[in-house]
Image 1 (cartoon, rainbow, N blue to C red):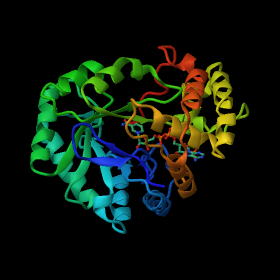
Image 2: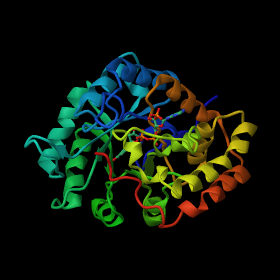
Image 3: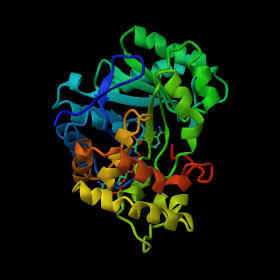
Length: 327
Ligand SMILES: NC(=O)c1ccc[n+]([C@@H]2O[C@H](COP(=O)([O-])OP(=O)(O)OC[C@H]3O[C@@H](n4cnc5c(N)ncnc54)[C@H](OP(=O)(O)O)[C@@H]3O)[C@@H](O)[C@H]2O)c1
């Protein structure tokens, strides 16, 4: 089946509406048990399954996710891949420092190009805002890199609406990545209308709420203390029971499509007009192959509304961030 092509902002960068999040690839510290060969396999499986966009970042394994993504891409035509990465973290002092200065971002892009073993990056995001750099100056540095052909689209991540407006002062911003899922719709009300009005694409992260929205958990869930999910508010009562009740309302719709809950949730994002590309992560190649099939699930308007309504209590400022961002 031919999949819908999505365009990023005002650029000619395109992708399938479903991408692959690779923050577990490379043994990223939140998920320390993922072996390199499993990471490589899951990226290759994504590309073989028709997924075009790969979302990585320097901070995922301090370059190691980028290196593995670069390695996995070797077996494929680079022009068929939409490659997104991010930078802003500096660990050279031993402490984590967030840096958006033009000279720092420029050096980061050069370093990412090397690790990814490519001569251009399709989307480069400023991963986190720092306190001091004027955002239009930070984005201005990325615009110069775009003019040199090193990056093709400019993004920011984890920026407030005020910071997004500042970053877009010259109209250079193409895409924003932030936490958003059926269980975390807080930012939607805040920033999505502005993004739509300015033709800026939106890429939600944690779309499966770290696995909860796949429907695989029940009341007996128990994570070891080192697993970040043991701290996530979604897995704490009474929120957890509310989430399970909402997820149960997806099951009949999934069954009608002969699909899984995860595929149905991903199809909901694909149908959502405010969302550009959804980037579920994965720990196993089989999860990637299954998630890619969400591109074949087309929800009716009524099914879309039923899911929307099932999560209505998560639409307002009641949920908060699920966790301090791991990076
Ligand atoms: N810009 C930012 O600051 C930022 C922050 C966070 C994430 N991100 C990006 O967003 C991406 C997505 O976030 P995420 O991966 O942390 O969370 P997510 O997409 O909400 O959840 C992914 C997790 O759900 C489980 N899963 C996925 N598919 C499944 C399936 N078909 N069946 C059963 N379980 C399945 C896997 O974990 P288990 O197998 O362990 O259950 C997987 O690691 C990241 O990879 C990263 O690229 C960006």
